[in-house]
Amino acid sequence: MNRIIIYYLQIGFLTLTILQTVVELYLLVRQKNNVLKHRDSVPEDFSEVISLADHQKAADYTWAKIKLAIPKHIIDLTLFLYWFPFRGLDHLQKYINTFDLSQISKDMLLIVFFMLIHSLIGIPFKLISTFIIEEKFGFNNLTLKMMIIDSLKELALSALLGIPLLGAMLYIFHALGEYWWIYAWGLMTSFQFLVIGIYPRWIAPLFNKFSPLEDKNLQTDLEKLVANTGNSLEAVFVMDASKRSSHGNAYFTGLGKSKRVVFFDTLLKSMNPNETLAVLAHELGHLKHKHILKSLITSLIFSFLGLALMGYVSHKEWFYLGHFNKVQSAGSLFLIFSTAIEVYTFWFTPIQSFFSRRNEFQADAYAASERPAGDMISALLKLYKDNSSTLTPDKVYASFYYSHPHASERIAALKKL
Ligand SMILES: [Zn+2]
Image (cartoon, rainbow, N blue to C red):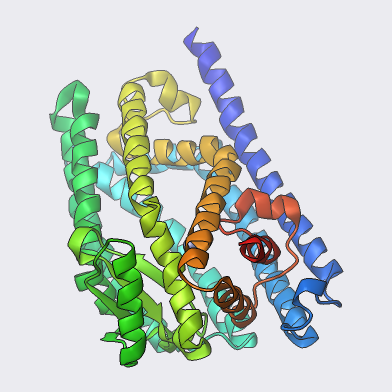
């Protein structure tokens, strides 16, 4: 019986991963074809505000990013084949097991080494993306020195926060018996809240400067909008995002009383005060509809279910053999499980994207109830233009991946309001 389970698991794991890469590449090619097919004419709805040159720039930018994504997917698949069917992980673990170390140190070494290889492979892609693609299209403001400093800070931060967390998780696995996964969930949840709590005040300022809004009239109007939702904000901040890239954005961060809205300086530079207010009203729409809270609760439920499943398979031999590993350890469990869960849940991406787009429509509708819908429309158009986002995505690609409805859908919905 177990041999049949192992056989089908191996076939399923391998086939689904290869199929995933095929689907990802197919969708990228569809996206490329559709974007390039419409490269030479601006869609009618946008012809007054987006010039042909801007439209062509967006098409070329999209295509340049796809050209980089294709080899990335192929390398990821190759790496998967090496680790699993070709038993790279199994061999690495056997090698580490010859060291004279405690079991927790061996597990930790395996996980850190695995993650390090993946980040090293990501480096050339990051370099090409920043210094070739972003540079060519005029978005990049990073220098190599700044990038190295950023990476060192990220590395120090993940060592400082990640290694103690990993060590504690491994300790829980080894010391707390059959129901280790419940304690592990408690630890992960507390850690998640800790990070949400310290991120705005302690982590984000390591990378950027946050300053108060200079425009006091705008500040007053923003505060009114916030008060209308029945919430209070700790503050509205402007972040010096322009030191890295000229892409514009705004986001919401923090929980409870320490909620903040952060505008990228790049966004404030291109938008007039009314458009800025519309963008804030959109962000507040997410708050009003409790999207942030709901997604936090959903992630807690899924991490609970995920860890329960991990607890169930943690001492099952068929789980390890079914994913091409002979050695059973906490290290291989964590790595196999996290890889496998991504492979098995990839097929739910369109559902997740669908709910995310629904939230965006709700936030837009809220923005239109608080501020003139026309301001939101012109803010969106500026965002699309300034970020060179394509106005002509492939329908299948967009419904699979897009977390935001594409431009024409959003604008059409706003016009109806
Ligand atoms: Zn949104």
